[in-house]
Amino acid sequence: MMKAWQMNELGDPWTNLCVAEVTLPTAPKGVCRIEVEAVDLNFADILQCQGSYQVKLDAPFTPGMNAVGKVIEVGENSGHAVGDRIIGPTYKGFGGYAEECFIAGTQATGLDDEVDPIKAAALHVTYGTAWFGLHLRGNLKAGETVLVLAAAGGVGAAAVELAKVHGCWVVAAAGGAEKTNACLQMGADEVVDYNSEDLYEKVMSLTDGRGVDVVYDPVGAHYFDMARRLVAWEGRYLIIGFAAGTIPSAPMNHALVKNYSLVGVHMGGYRGRDDKPFDDCYRELYGMLVEDRISPLVDAVVGFDQLPEMLQRLANRQSKGRIGFAPGR
Image (cartoon, rainbow, N blue to C red; front, side, top):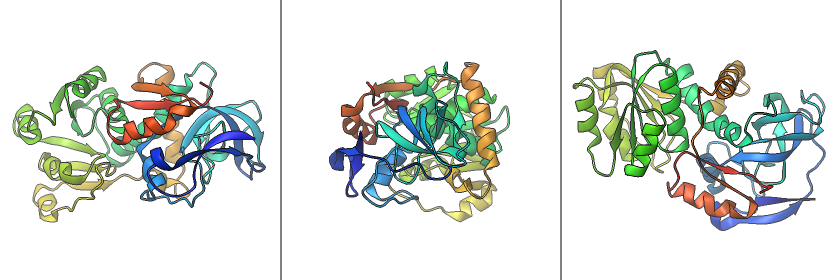
């Protein structure tokens, strides 16, 4: 038996999560059971709890899309052994917000003991999403100009850092001085404060009226209508998600006359269709982490009991960078 946070019905996780004593079944084929060291809190976890994420889970389930930990049981053909330290996506509702969870072993990556589990967990989804968006889908080139929306959040901060590592000039947009200062610490060249500055006017001034080569948008809603006007001739608008809760409509004539591309980025959609990009992505990201070329911004690390409160903080956009969950704390 072990403790786990469970959703017995869909809704806001800070309201509906319940602590349960759970016994996991025998690890299925291709799956590892791990003792959880660290999990990264993702906005997508909140959407999944509310029933509005692309991948649906039926209650009851334990959220937490990825986890780091030591393998304590292996299913057939899992690709790992008991005692291995791995990180990977969790399996079919046996998520990481628990003392133990299931990991899809065939999709997991081995981690050396010296790698910080909180930073590794923080990197897995957010930096993975940024890598798929900027590199695989966005075909980012050194020297290009990138505008990152919600740049102080986890997915945005990852995009700022990866774009800088790739040799780009980055404008980071966020709300409030505390968040824009965090963006500068992450390496942004310029910042725009949503709360006190006009996004369009500031970016056009910074780019001498040209606009930007790439917009990285995890927010949607009315931010889309502001940012689409900032895409330069033959630029790319990367559609990462809709954290603001509203899916915008695109005036396609605008894309036509400026010859820019609206590019969808669904990292999870590659699973089962083309798995090779995941190998390339994590080989590069964990290599950069070990070499200290990237360092995920971690706002807080919480223990088991504080999880619902911190998910609400994440939903209210009161965090900078990532929030880590370490059930053993």
